[in-house]
Image 1 (cartoon, rainbow, N blue to C red):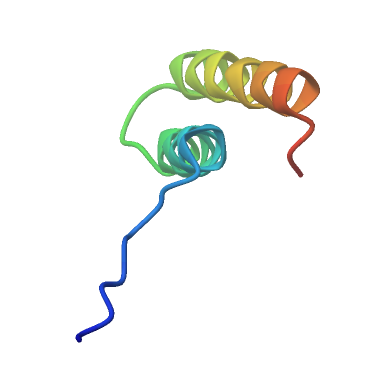
Image 2: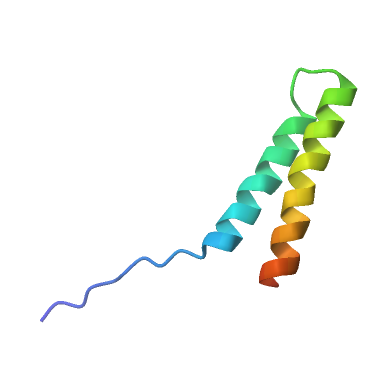
Amino acid sequence: MTTRHILTLNLPKARTAFHRACALAALHADSSLAVRLRRWNHHMTIVRTLESVGGEK
């Protein structure tokens, strides 16, 4: 019998990683400093919320 490997995803951790990547992308965007800072703060607020709720780091 063949063993099946099931891919399990840690969705809160994946969402946290996604928003961290978005925050870094916001810093390197071709926008004004105010827009880049606003996007960075928006995504990092979400990251902090996800980490506090899920306990992930």
